[in-house]
Length: 471
Image (tube, rainbow, N blue to C red):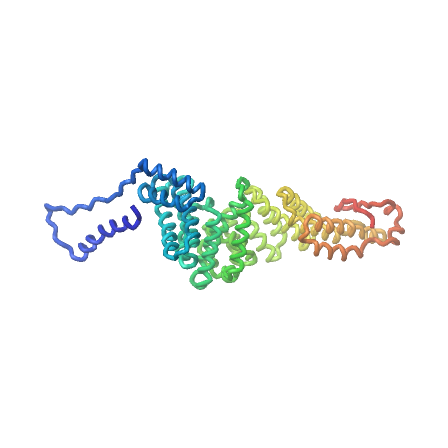
């Protein structure tokens, strides 16, 4: 029975009840009121004819003979809709092909409505399937709304897609996650004042699941999930809803009211981090409150940013140490590399702890190497080069003044290495190479120290401890 038929039974039972409510009648004690018996539709019988027609349908679908397949499909769909779920999985493929081939608008409309009805019937008979449950099928219905009706049914599509994602969670189909954000963005654009929170919520939900899928090393489609996540990130960033001030306005009261709700605080922190609103006071408040309840890499990183904004760079590095350890425990190694790099920057630029900065930069390079990622290594080599160029490992006398210039050799070595491993930093590396090459020891200065510059190489001492080529 279709859902419409079920609705008729429900209404039929409801109308007398409403009438009695409006005009109550006296009922004798000898004749007690009895509830109407529930009407249950019997499960359709799977006949041999249905099985034969199903086999013929499968044969035709394999050969893409969709016109012939439709006749066999329709018999089974009408008489034995519970025969096999292939009736719906392959039936969807058949309906799509017939819809594209149809030229009559009325026929296209009929097929479009049939495609939606088919998903409802699949939920009724196969909604308890372990792999493709009702929530999954609801996602297919949402996609069907878009495929067949476009923006005309965008509200219905968004409702189905959201319901699917809420039910399937991290196992949601990537196409459903992506499409949820696409349609929600369109609705937001139509009514930005009323639907901004809905759009943010849809984006946050989809981005969270795609990020989890992308970081799952056992997921063979992890790289594809990462592409989808980057795409919806771009959609969100360009939507206008990603304005940090607007997010502060929305989430400020939420954070204030949920200082003891770790889930809410972490979700807010992740959202603000994803869209790069990490200078926000709301982000800081969420991270600080969450970190007090239960330290996570997000809360530690947020506290690091907050400390740096306040000028407490020692605390910032300490928080990044916590973030690194927590991210390692979660095997989020790309985040580990970022935290290590950020700590290196603070040690170099703000604390002038060059040896510490090199330690963090080398650790970030090692992390990225283990991930086979070259982008990001270049910036680390540049930090190391800047640390070398800023150091004075020798004395302040005349000899030391000459020997101190050798740091520019090893600094330029690192800038060259930076652009070799990571072409994205080539322009910056070339600028530093040009700038610092002018400070190499001159030939006359090397002539004044023949013992130190006797060969073709030179060992730069102190904490640097690297051998370089004399130039």
